[in-house]
Length: 324
Image 1 (tube, one colour):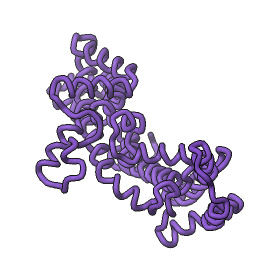
Image 2: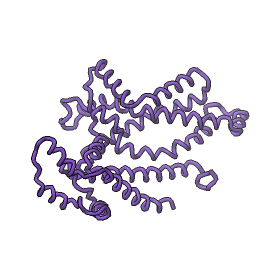
Image 3: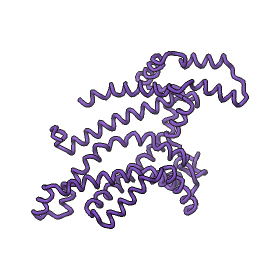
Image 4: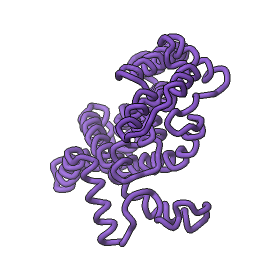
């Protein structure tokens, strides 16, 4: 039943996204004319009128939307980027591998640290370990990501003589893929992974700790402990499984972040991911490029939510039988 809601949801999201993109006054061609005139260059009005006619910029909103969404659904054509004069699909495909690498690495980093830390913090409540983890978590949540990116970039340059900005050293930017380029990528990847993962890690730690504390005080845990079940087996078999429910229910929400990455961090560190491309498209009112990226993010958000619901139903019988 939940699957049937996906299609109308995506249609509504695509309409809203396309509408919001066109809210700012003017359009891409108007912005280009203003830039050329500010630089003292002449503008061929006939050429601009021809471009408006070609891209249907003067058409009503519904005509533009139907033309855009129709080409996507029927032909897989996301349109042509006004600014880059390239197909939107080509621009996205060029940046997708690095974006996915950053997103997957960040997700693995977050899960690998947050879950064990949250469980440990709950089991060792009111100990120095608990206080230390909580303190680090609060600091990670409070520090702006752009500031953390600048600090880590400086430390990487000062301590490891690492080039600042981008995911590759200058000599590997245009080099073909090989072992050397992959190793260089790993050497640069740790800074954005740590920066982006800090806030998410701190949030998951807090949620996991709170859920674990709630479960550890329930009667079934006391009963199992009274029957002589070892503490490690008791914690792993019962409280951890139930405390994972909120985590599983939001796991699919990370799917869009694998696609767009973190825009602010990507801008500060000059990462060649899709996030800065979306920001540039919004600034220049490149509606096909911005609309295509936003639509893909929306689709991934809906699909991720559906995946989370299915995973939660798979691990928790109460959800399947409607008793949760």
